[in-house]
Amino acid sequence: MQISSRFSVAVHVLTLLADNPAGELLTSDRLAGSVNTNPVVIRRILGQLKKAGLVEVRAAAGGTYLRRDPATLTLLDVYRAVDVVEGALFSVHEHPNPHCAMGRHIQAALDGTLARAQAALERELAATTLAQVVASVREPVG
Figure (cartoon, rainbow, N blue to C red):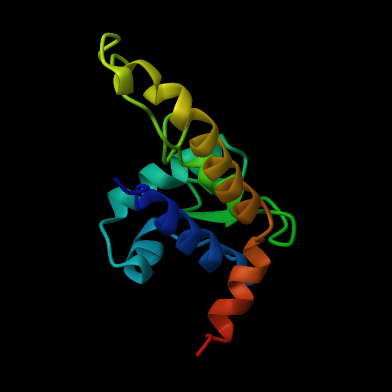
């Protein structure tokens, strides 16, 4: 299992918008060209980002702009906006065999570890801003 690519596509789109001159709208076609995907995919993601209040889409004017300051917009905001996972990052199978010594206790054995793993991911995403991503893209590492 992996996290949906919607997350990385959304970050890519937001990075383009953050690096765009103020007042200039970017079309879904232009965004799709950079991501190398279909504009329909971009429009779906823009819809999710708009619903979360991260972007504004002006259909009549033909473009999108960033509504939040990149220095305060975190990757956790993006992660939550595009619904890459439903609720918890990990799910444990719901009906292990209660008559099996392992099955009876597997959920309790995993719950704490999986909750800590999700919390660690969310802490890391919350510590990274869109402005930091833009800076990293401008000055590639290595």
